[in-house]
Amino acid sequence: MRPRSRITKNQLATNDASRGSVGKRASSAKLATRERQKISAAAAEIFSVQERLRPVLRRAWPNGSDKDISWLAADLAGLWKVSRIHFLITNRLFKMGNHPDHDALRRILIDLKINWIEDAMSHIRTLKGEVRRFSNSME
Image (cartoon, rainbow, N blue to C red; front, top):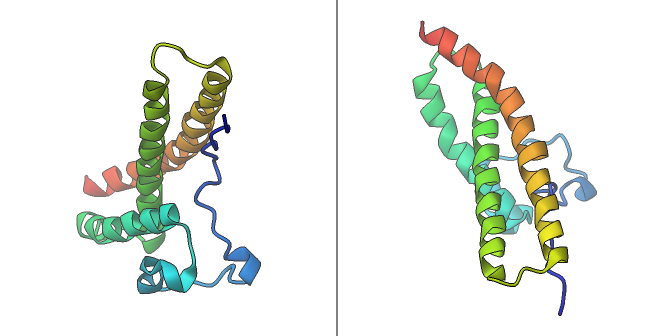
């Protein structure tokens, strides 16, 4: 039986760095078109979530800086991605049925640790500051 591939923390990484596009800002139209940028489906999905969140956050927080709104959108989209990965990991547990494989359980535990302890916590740390600034601006 072939081992299943693990969901890694760097799942959304693109190969843009190898093409020398680091630091260049692509338009949202290009990011939405996977063929032009050759980014993964997961990365295209998270960029799409960020792009949909930005105008909503801009209307809700009109005096917020572009940086604050971008970071807030990125962290909210990142937590959305964490929830999607959690759903996939949980489904792997359900598929095991009544006879779990201990090696598979160990791999799932590692994936859960990476997803929740590493990825989610980093988004929550930065999100706390953005939410504080957002709520202070509402007073």
